[in-house]
Length: 207
Ligand code: DLZ
Image 1 (cartoon, rainbow, N blue to C red):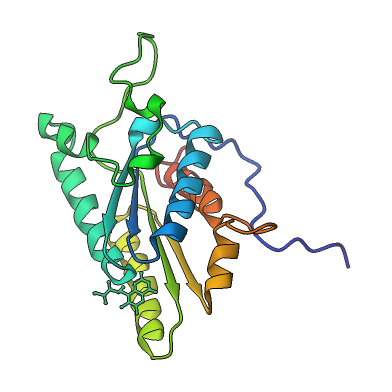
Image 2 (image 1 turned 90 degrees about the vertical axis):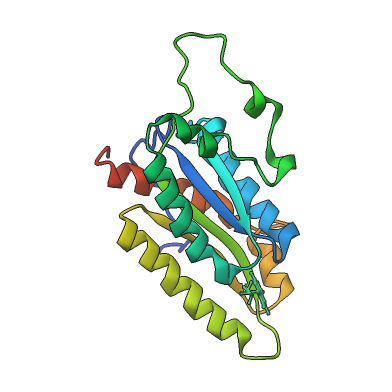
């Protein structure tokens, strides 16, 4: 048998996200690990897929159980605001992980008149990011089940791709490994960033 490399094989298509607007909703439970995953997703979308930093909106919720509701509410309000002037509210939503905002993100307008501008209105994709770590009770099982079903439902009901960026780990070590926080670890946030761009392009029939 050929050598088997576990994980996702990158798409052979060009994943150009320069015209996409993406929402990342993340938990504040297990925040240091979540921050690494959000950073991985954000930086991959910007550096690998040309998503504009100003077209990535980041919001937070307490825990993973809240992710589906928040994703749905934010998708709906962005759609309702559409391209109207009130769209500025979400377009300028604060980056709740301030340290993830680079100085380039903060430039109000590009001096280059041909440069792409920040999009307003509906999101093309959403990434829900969280880290569930099994404890000694059944809480983990209930939350995992509810969150995975909820995230799937939000995507199918809203017709916006919602990426399942939730680690469901048996211990801290697994979580650190999958957030790329240990040597030879892999940051799954990077895969989620690529998945969001790919699925947004599928949804927009741009692939
Ligand atoms: C309660 C709880 C527990 C035990 N563990 C986690 C976890 O590992 N990761 C996470 O994101 N959230 C956890 N929560 C919080 C729930 O997701 C939720 O925020 C609360 O039950 C309130 O609805």
